[in-house]
Figure 1: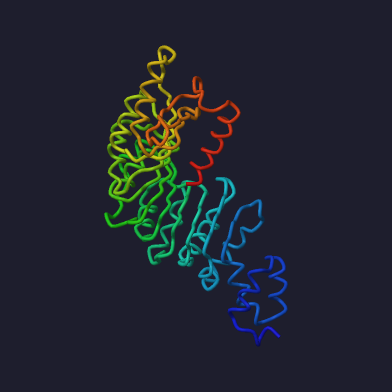
Figure 2 (figure 1 turned 30 degrees about the vertical axis):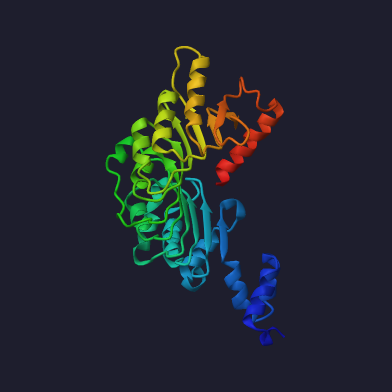
Length: 329
């Protein structure tokens, strides 16, 4: 029966079938089999908990299947993978040239799995996240991902950052989102249209702000930790990144005394100079804001401890909502 149906109709039917049922259906019809095979390998999430590590072996040995993969995510702890497994992973990755999303959260010392990709290009890859620092293997891989929009890299030690490889000037021409350390951000962001920067490690200084502001697009999202005094850093951000929409800063500065009202007023005044700012968090405290006057675009910002803009229960909900927006942007 299936042999007489157009391939487009078969494809539409198979997309509505659950994976386990699709496997069973493919075994009953030679017409369904190639369509099912393509769909079953399109989106893969591999982990020991899912008991599907063998898929990597299949993709390494059957390049024709690897060509169907569009999203691939692998999560392994450092003790799970063996060298032989990583060798097969390297082969599989070189075969998956149709990828649009790739996540590799494995042993950070195994970035060499990317070295086999020197013969491959990834023209469709939009997202790449990994537990690797920016080393020579990662840099070479990134130079071959011209469509990449989102990048997440692991932190790099200060000693290694002195020898961090440089990317080709023409690489990552469309990158809009970066997640990683402050050291790596300084190597990635300048000269590229990065709008969202989330720094999960490292210390953001005023000097770093100047470097990150060399993005060729307006930075609208920033999350970072700093050991600097908050007020001068915020003033630098207001000067260098005037179009920030969401800003989250965690400070580890050791205050000799508890911040006074003047300190918070200075922060509020600095935030008011950021005309596009919609959300601000300082060390986990979400600040509220309200228009200065009716039909006035300028806003007044107040820290949660003295803000009478919203009720406490509303402020808690607003903070949760803001955090979700920040992560989803």
